[in-house]
Image (tube, rainbow, N blue to C red; front, side, top):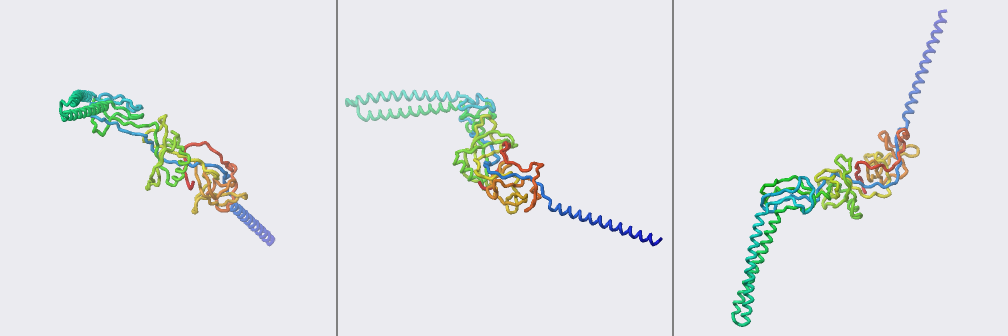
Length: 399
């Protein structure tokens, strides 16, 4: 009886050990199966289809608003500042009277020289009458020719005195006219530098007030020397290039104008060249010495391949994209970048229209990776024209 108990106990132990070994083997097989499956799992990505299109070349830069003309109005004669006829910051027109100096000292000089002119004119008239009489007597052989010649010289002398007096009168009247200080061009005056009642001098360098021309107004901004050739060709071909300026935050467009001039030197320190654009500024949104963001827009390049800018990657060998074939396999495709404008970029070489490129999820990809398109977050993106917002364009690569 005791032997039967021992035999049955041994059978139970063997059965338990066999069951445990079977469970452990099954779990190990399941785990290996899971790992093997995970190692071949497809990576979720989002893709976009490359399409043909035209992307404009846009250059951004930080510019400075510059008044077309800026002058400091200074007195041209020494006198007392008698009247001020402008308000500080006022817009004035050309030839508008701004200030008046005391004219009385200059009027006295004018009257003095007018009197001297009349005196010398009377002497000239008398000398001419004597010359006429002497010439008549010489014809009758009543006087010598020397006396006639002397009278001719006296007439010429008096004529010179009259001409000198006329010049002095003109100069005195010119000095008198300097007492009326007028605006040489239409613009905006600044803050008054001298109050009425002060003595002003022509030798003063401070001046009376500053005047700036703000309509039209200019903006000077730099562009990289690599982009200069494209700008010059466009400027010569079309005669003008559209330019827009935005506020300091790069969100609000302040004005639109056109390219006016290209500087004749490249700054060797910065590798840039200055451009000047002009704006009508009829709404006075631009102010001299204001810092603005400038966007220079040139005609679009033809027959380009467009992709989202996020599809472009950079590696040791240069820019590339992850292209997805029909079998959902990823291939690293080297490309040559063209223009980047906002969210879009052009590719001049290395990609054909109709090919799919990865736009999201590229950080986990390698050559030959298997992917599936994440339909939940959009899947394949269509390339369309989005409304233009703040300027964020730049020129990269060749044009």
